[in-house]
Image (cartoon, rainbow, N blue to C red):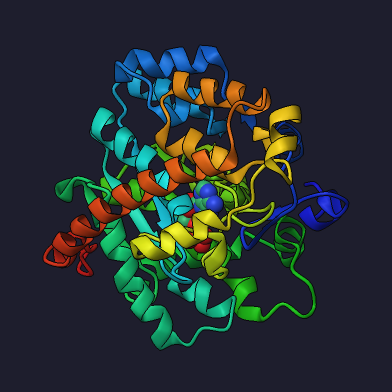
Length: 380
Ligand code: TYM
């Protein structure tokens, strides 16, 4: 097992389930984490099942995987897979969180998969300064976002850890018993000052990797769409899966939608860094107008030297969320050649985000009547 992430990345970037800092080198991350790149060949295979490639696969926002080829082969041989994803309710949901959920919905539609959606309220209580009451409010608000994505009601079940603990606990003990402190320390970088709740938490995030096999009464493949920050949890569960008589869970990993302010990812705990699904239009405009770009300090220099879309948060949001591929390539060329000013891109992002978020807010309103339909049954 490799040494802790902190030691690996302390010089330039750091990626853990609780912190993403610096400018992430994704090619290097694949090597360090020991995951696989999503190749064009694998995308072709995916396309042969789905008929069309989801934009987040085509534009390589999802760039890495574990056993995606294996799970597609299983599907080809008539073994259907479950999807599993989740949310740690540290605050309101931002556009970054939606990215893995968009792909999850697409996969649910195309493969007609059951989906387990875990809400780790315990994790966010243990890690951070929020009270349990504050976290509980976030749980409700976040559930509205999850439902607003449009998952199939009949095939989606949301588990909230503190509420569904009796459905999770025995299996979590089976996992916990097979993991030493030394392994957990090396995977998560725990230290002597980490509270012991955090140290004991990871098995709970592991349980839904195996719950489908328990529900179905036979080993059942599971595919987890998430950003790559969650990979440490899967490494832990993959290590012990076969010893417990289950398949190793497969993953498909995304990059991070960046912070609007600097490098690093959008974060719920830093409101200025993110566009939230609950933001009002005026707030969205303000945040976008203050966003970090790859532009030059003056219009004159921008026209002369061009900008750098490679480091521009506004360009990334437009590329991954709103621009069609050709449009994005043209935007890049125009920016680099000095024929596009940051104000124009900010205007485009502001109007696209405002329209999208207001449509999403209507869906959140409608979701209020559906909450109980989406909850995992405690009697299971
Ligand atoms: P959380 O709440 O931090 O994040 C929820 C999901 O969003 C992804 N994510 C992002 N994706 C793109 N750009 C960003 N800026 C960005 N920030 C976060 C995360 O990778 C995640 O997929 N411990 C988890 C909750 C959880 C979970 C799971 C997540 C429980 N079971 C299974 C994924 C799969 C958490 O706190 O996620």
